[in-house]
Image (cartoon, rainbow over all chains, first blue to last red; front, side):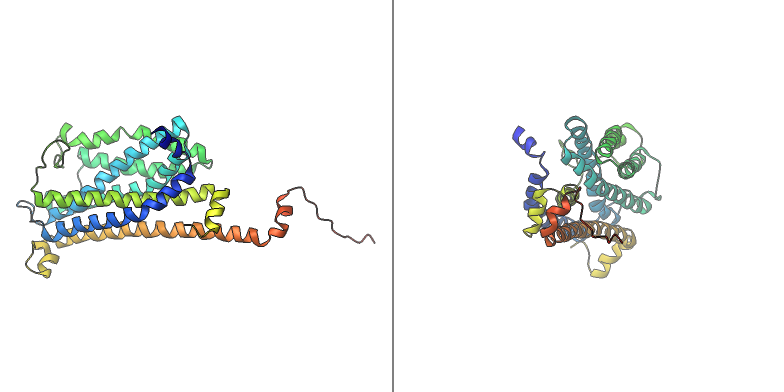
Length: 247
Length: 79
């Protein structure tokens, strides 16, 4: 375990591992996501209250889960940056923040479009929606802060601090529907209980969530590889690898 | 199948615009991000490759050029 952590300190090691895993992540991710979405769109029964608009759930929930997950990962990476000064943690945060921004936007957008026929409104300032909007701003802030600081190491530390300060938002998002009286409904998928959803609905949802996680894995590997190349372009291993036709 | 026909599938009993807008935006943004990231990765690799090849192309003078305190004697006529 300790050895793994030590290896993780080497961008070159990660580059190799990422290259090996990426094809599997892409194929498995696409297959699962496609299966989940097609099942959810065409085969799952319609909701007895909402009709067919609920099918947005198969996009809305995966993007929302991932947006929050990614932020937690970024916060963990932030701790690693501040405590251990590990380059790869900086690379992760920089590579993944824009992805988090896009997924948070997607979850807000799909939520708004779903809300119109369901609740009669595109937006409401309830706890869940507002805290997700704050998450969007946190992602945007992390990206902007990184761009504003010229020195790579200082930028990484500043962004790590920002991300860590903002991580308090994550439990607020998660428990908002329990702590406050919100328009957004409570959790359907729980770790310890049966879902309050029929099988024909929660199985495609789970497939979509897993598929999107794997696709995120592929995207994170790709973006981290690019970032590593940019940072390490003057090193011997990058030169040897590229001249040998490596990817 | 949850729908009787393809047009019923598109219409989604009136909810079509909402559902299909969401799916379209999702596909465009996610696929767009994946493609853009792949292209950027390619571009960085190509850029590095070009630079390394340039360096190798002048590898005869490479060592000399690397030394910062190299002065090239220039013949200047003194008349």
